[in-house]
Length: 102
Image 1: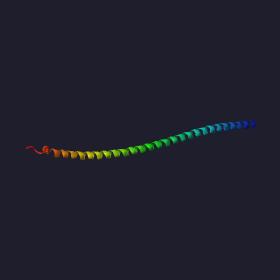
Image 2 (image 1 turned 120 degrees about the vertical axis):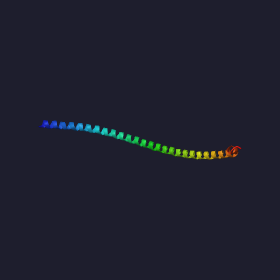
Image 3 (image 1 turned 90 degrees about the vertical axis):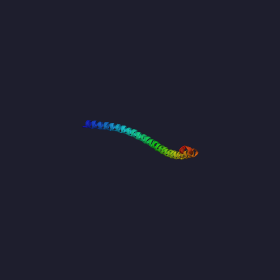
């Protein structure tokens, strides 16, 4: 009976030793996962900052495009006014071209 008890205690010791080893491996794995998660968080934060910066740059470009289009429209209108004035002046300088010849 003592032999069985000794074998049983020996088996329990072996199981406890294996359990300790498993716990140690698990702790190591958890530590690695924690490090990976921290790395992913840093990467995600960096990507969010980059995305926010690019969004701001895109908004600035869109504002510039709107401003350029407005200036182009104003320039086109001024050109049309000037062209109209030039045509009017040409008609005043050459009135004979618009009157029927006798």
